[in-house]
Length: 187
Image 1 (cartoon, rainbow, N blue to C red):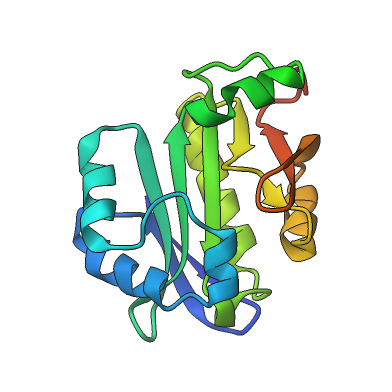
Image 2: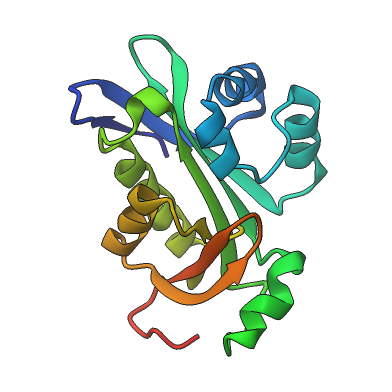
């Protein structure tokens, strides 16, 4: 179910699940991200064919978008992988986390550079969280963690009750962060 929100910059944005009809809009959104934002967001290649292949392959992935109603352009995008990223398995288990493909998911969020700090990231995350809870998801893992020097993102995750569960080095220092979607924080 789609939802309209008003951002801090007084813009009306539609939040909804990604549709395969959005692939051109999504490709344009991704290509227009700054080099800095692209460096921090990379769950998949940014070309239309790769995105199409990803979402057509299986029900393992779900995309969510925020669309500026004035321009009809995507201004925020998040991808969910149901389950966890196999590459992260050993690292996450080393923290004592018991992973579960049916109740865990992995999240990679992004917001267009000019829309950051307008509240859209929080609105989109709450929209996603509501949808995931309906699907029985109990834990959200950040896709590839968060870069330790990305203070804005770390503060966003902390405000949304993510907990740091570990640290690792890959192209710099990173934190693994996890959100329990239920009242218990047992990992």
